[in-house]
Amino acid sequence: MDNTYDALLEGSAEILRSSFGAANVPADHFQGGTTTVGLMAEHGFSALITVRNSQQKVDLLFDAGLSPYAVIHNSDRIGVDLTGLQGVVLSHGHCDHAGGLSGLAQRLGQRRMPMVVHPGVWTRRRLTPPRSGLGELPTLSRHALAAEGFEIIERRQPSLLVDHTVLVTGEVDRTTEFEHGMPTSHQAWNGNEWFHDPLVIDDQALVILLRNQGLVVITGCGHAGVINILRQAQRLTGTRPVHALIGGLHLSGPFFEPIIAPTIAALADISPRLISSGHCTGWRAQHALAAAFPYAWVPSSSGTTYRLTSV
Image (cartoon, rainbow, N blue to C red; front, side):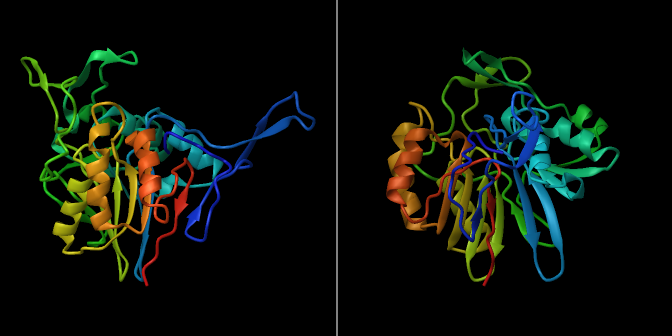
């Protein structure tokens, strides 16, 4: 699930696109009574991560989109069975990454589902002055999630999942000079008052090591700063090459656009083979990334499958 859906995007052996024809729905005004439809896009992010090695295959859901049923809707249209999930990881507590958890819980029924989160996901937050009709943001409820069947696992530190195959970064060290976090309009409640919350300290990413290829790094919004995230992934794994960077980079809007250039300069030193930036990256940053990395950057779209293999 991503902010965009483009049914005409070209695919490749490594990148598969979902085109029109993913499903048919009733439409009486057409001969035959049906029409062909594609997938949904919304201001949110969700990725189904399938890890295969010689011993096992494991499916994890990284984030769940904005609305309760959009991820379920898309998975049904392309024939993906989410009942086989073995775990959920939340990048952070913002509603555009956690809204689909209720729909997922209904689909899973009574199954207990482990969910890895940072303790900061329960933070009460708001945007002031309100933008796009938003003031206080929806806040996750630990009690409600537990009642829906999620087994909450809170971790601040990096953690390994799937027999040490998948790394959750935990809190990301803020080391760059230019990635300063959110503007003053992003605030959190400390129990007594609202205060500026620049860090979104619960922001974390998912990292997978492909043998002889390098790291695959998947971000939700990248509130910690994409360069901070990539450098942390390199430090934690002891691996320099980054094979792929996928997800939101949060470079959208006047506050973040001044750091597009230094971000691209630092990203050039890391030189990922594949960059698929989406969600909150922003159109100016997307254009700049496409120009700077013409052979690495590919547009993101709901329903895209990336087949990344070791050698």
